[in-house]
Length: 320
Image (cartoon, rainbow, N blue to C red; front, side):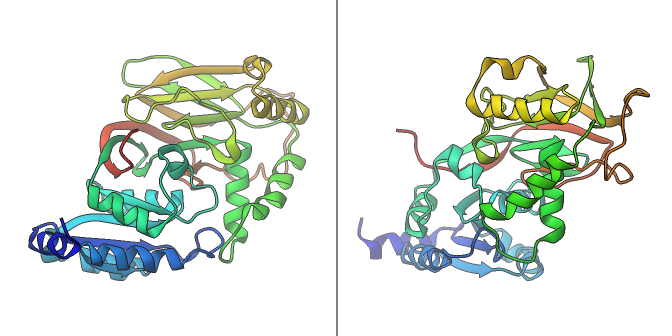
């Protein structure tokens, strides 16, 4: 089929609208030319394309039924947080992604291309996967939620963030999170919905997809469409215990599992539980424990988490 014939076919299609959201703060901001390439190639393929970086204007546009009914998909140009944002604002809509963030865990796991032309081709081909999404209270997330050192890092980073960032921006928040660590405050995790079981630890990770920041293999067995969440609870309490554990996880050593509880669940609740009298207060103990989801600050404790099976349609490359 020629490009001209393909364009006629697309314009006659009821679902001919592609809306692109660009997050100007994602990553380093050095690959913005790929957004223009994405828009140009989509138009060559016959789609009607609207590009937004203002969320309010985009919401107003898509709240019009005349536009929403013609929507083929929404493309998020940004990082994992951009896709999570779209997931919360437009539940049920088909999403695609042009990776432009710092970590791009979703893109790494699904092998999404970083080229605007290649993403446009994925949109045209239309192959997608139905993935589980998760709720932290009323907030949706796709990848993971955690309470612990990494959540402290995310909170510190976002409190001081002014614009685009690189991996170097994480250095000082990571150092601060570890250096102010003495004896951690504990988090209690309780299964709900008839599954039973209550556990506690100083670092809790609830994962839906095995990809994690900086390549840490915390939950390699997580599956994004199995209807359950993988839960990992680290019980170490001291600074050096946590550092040693992080190094063991990074190196893939079996000793990393010595102080870890693992289980799967459909739903659970997280709340803070104070340790015994031997616990020492750490700097920041007067503020609520930080919670992060998909690399952004999330609702604080207590939080109820549940999975909604196969509730996101994400456009991905066809399997080999």
